[in-house]
Length: 305
Image (cartoon, rainbow, N blue to C red; front, side, top):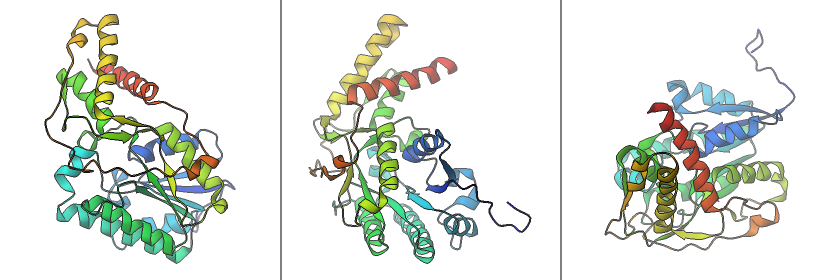
């Protein structure tokens, strides 16, 4: 800040990440800071109540959007299937997401900023409050001529256990409880994308922003489907390797399949649109991605054991 309270400008593109401590936001913040190319500004409720996007009015949000050159709107009250099953039908879930959208989109409209809104491949699933709210975000985005990206099950290290997605959830339970219980029978299939690949896609979209129209189908995914059972078996394989090399107790890590069918996505099959492959391609296969996440999480448990 200068003496007059205005923001000093470094000459670098000022990129604001709304939801900078979430699963994708944390990776994107770190990724964009690597090359010293951008002035990356974080905005997330974990930094304090002044960065709670539900606050209306929010002087802090007002200031950061006004002074941004580009915005990634990743902020949402969301988690993996376990979290959604528990909370998405509650007043707080719907209200939290409605308020933060009204707030942020209103300011983006006021200052006419280029932005990307993070949607989900679930946005056409009318049985899901989460999907419907994401669809509302897409409609806001189209009216403001922003770009919508649809994420398909991005995975990476997560700090918030309650909101953890399936891969980190299984690995954590394997380390902490010696077994991991599946919510379903595991036959449902998903397309998983490694967080680092997701970051590359987002940077590419930002840098090629004028190439795209608001109606373009920007599906950010691996374009490969795997069953939850495959994910569980791959993680169990990582524990078996650890049991052979490090500690035999890990040989006993077990999968407990559930009996239920998938109720969160109703095992709906959306087709991924591969339009984005003209600009970006994912690099990390699911097996390699799981091995990377497992290795990172193993360090944490070794450190705390």
